[in-house]
Length: 195
Image (cartoon, rainbow, N blue to C red):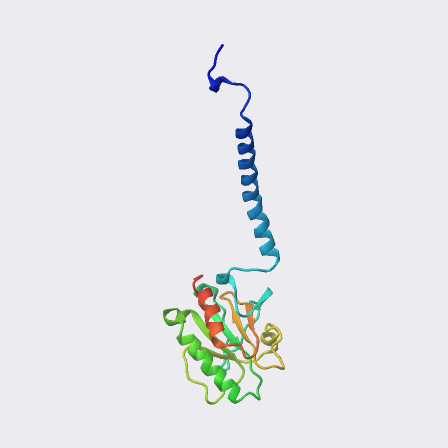
């Protein structure tokens, strides 16, 4: 008789249980992570680095066909090849002190972009307040009906919303009136990393 245990035809019951346990653990690890990811995805959770402070417009408003008019005359072109992001505001004509403060806040936001500031413009749609700081990044546009329609809920009774427009001319973010300018800076800084 051959007494070598390696040639035995019946497996050891403890090894069978151990093998099954390992297989079940691998199954749970694989499908459990997929199930957990699905639960997090459909519950609306997002990693901190992908969250934005503004309202993501879904779908984004396509303003590519709109040809904004500069207040000084002529057209403002989107020019996607320049990879220019825009922060846009369209305050009411009766805006005074609030508009002056908003113009100052947006100027500070623009300055904080540092070497990336060359890729951001501020679009001021309407009359610029008298106390607004002078900045090379600001373009004053006429409030044409086509342009105003491209800005969702622009006539917010709570105040002046702020928008972010991508280099192609899509309005992608809306900030509620009174939003901390630091939040706008944080979100646009993330977008600037894409260029």
